[in-house]
Length: 551
Image (cartoon, rainbow, N blue to C red; front, side, top):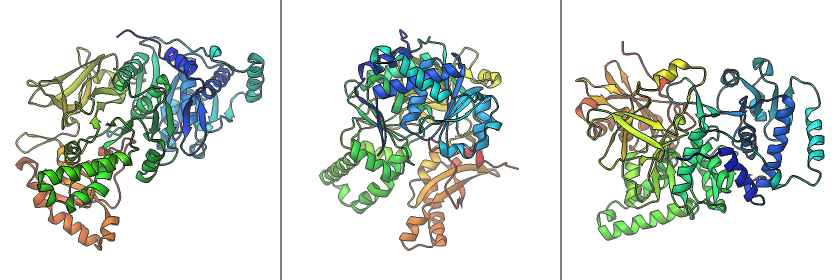
């Protein structure tokens, strides 16, 4: 794959799409590409004033908003290294990550700043409020803002024009950004993403998105931009083609998401499976259950499926080419139903360490239970004596693979095989056509009584199909399997059930659950969670918080 500078691609896109809308806060202000260019130049002058050098780190910690995109692009195109930090982290974690990353500048949301302190981050030169780019703190007490505004006016007396845009030219193996993981294992590691990994993902996205995605496309960004999945496919790729991104600046509840889809009519939808699963459980499954008898009749079955499909496509804005799901496992029952009615969705697979994409297939080429085929510029293998039938660790190498973990040589060494392949920690098999089928995380795998491999995700998919179950987690508990279940107490109450009646109903259904599971993977008991599980931004459960010792 011939490499081209990512920053020069962005430079060309900004010049070409100068008058087009670029970034909007949903139900708020819109910035055109020319507005972004001007703010980037302003920030570049500020970086120079602060003595920021190429390769210095710039931390960003904020909810999704247009200025997050501006600050990220300003850092990248200056030659600095942006360090996106998830705003859901606790203040002590944010302090730690800012310090660990050696950041010299921090862009921060005003609400998050209320819980932070500059004295806890002594290496910072400046702290800037994200929403208005106002200076919060500076080691240099001088009037930086006024000096920059004066110099900006003097440099561009006729206004800032497309030909004034000139960005840092990056190299393939150069460090582009550091993205801290927030996975299910509990320890954040700073993933060092090179420019070639960004470029690899961008080129592949451009190839598979043509001709549907272009400079007239509309996208709703509802995933955290500080996470690699949302950052790449709801923001960064769009900026390279001149598309218009609408940031949901509030908590992306189903109601807010559907309202935005209805108003914006996005051309593509990037989501996590939980969104589709919630829609299926709350709106689709009740309809299916009511018409079960009729759905045994082939013609009537197809009419009902067509009606549901039309309603769902309308609910998602009506204009999208496909819904791309990733970041977590998709419930098999929901996936089977969606495929039966030919809903245009596909399931991809990726990791932060691959910026993020590893496998993907267009929705009409996708196969049930699979997450697609390996992307261009990447190779994939299964560490198994028979990759087609015996699950083994998924291992990859290629242009999209990261450089290592920041200031963590031991973790970096452990992440790669002796012959240089990245160990994903996920278990899977490949079919004869190269489609990948994931079986679960190797760290989550439980050893059965006779040495069988039990993947709790597969058991949880069965439990989650039970009425009134929101989510579940299967753990090993004193030699047996226990299912931790978070039920929908509110829905049960609306249906006239007490908490005790609800829990008894689910517990009484345990034999039915076990009838769908292998003998060596039987659930011994169910325990109920009073509130939802703690989750990562991808909505995966933080499993490590719920593990028990088997003494």
